[in-house]
Length: 156
Image (cartoon, rainbow, N blue to C red):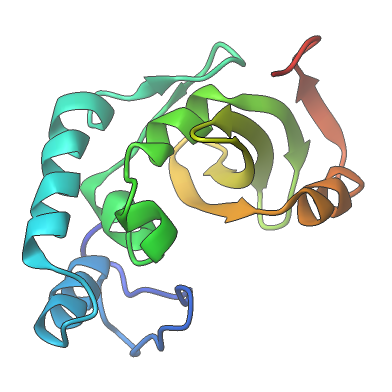
């Protein structure tokens, strides 16, 4: 995703406006009071310090996270509140499966106050498309879709 591309996916409970870039969307949500400018600035600082140069995934591949990708995923309040989850989710990948539109679906586990699971969607280039915190039931459902491409022998 680039900052100039219109957003084509909705966030949690948030309507998407046609031809709105990810940055425009975040700016609008700040103006509407749905997120704070300080939270966005903190997420952008962490992106610059820890995500902008890529994250090495357990697959051995380097995931890229553009600023536009960051703006896309922080619309989900569960990511904005704890934007360090982006790095944790990429480092916690234990299985990668084929998905639609030449994308790959990675299943991930990590630990905060308690164990969490999620889904990471990557483009063929290993660029982050989106990610979601999900429950175990949804994770198991997704584990039965697509073709297995990679699995960690032992996962946390």
